[in-house]
Image 1 (cartoon, rainbow, N blue to C red):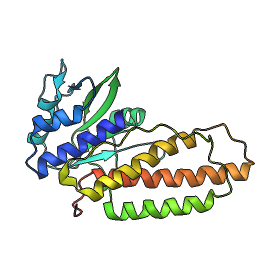
Image 2 (cartoon, one colour):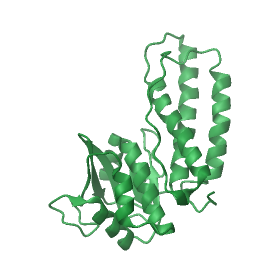
Image 3 (cartoon, rainbow, N blue to C red):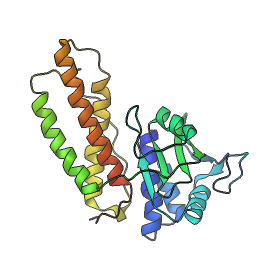
Length: 240
């Protein structure tokens, strides 16, 4: 739920900058089937009331007005924080939920937290993030990583025989184009399947086999995360 919300918010903030999409329509699309999205701007970074929750549309409109830059998706995990660069308050909360949205110029970040069937966005100060790389290159690396992982894991069990149930990926705004949506769909499936595989303790392997399996799955997870981040973050790559 937090990752889906972060993907959708990143994409729709960028779509508002690069197309005629309005904040009102974008906020409605980000909310989707969730009960509600509300925003807590405790630091006053968006100029909203710091003592009460604000509507998503108002927060998106304020962010687009105050921050003249594109927006990046981050999916931090222990040992893999890039392009997130802090500060500590942001890093800690983003690691806890596994996703955040950061202004490319730095200064502000959005962190989604599920509250029942709703999402609460916490607005926090953010250092300028690192570069996210090239979307086409990340997609090509993901394809190569899938092939390499298949070779490595050919003789090793992947864990439970049951396939995890994975919700459909978020739909990107039309301005992103078909290629970006295809990359997101591919990476989305892998990220969720690999999360299950990497936490599956229901297999017995000798030490070398277990290490090889984890290494291969972790490398593929990194490639999937990177493809997802670069496809959703607006990197200036041609989109069609």
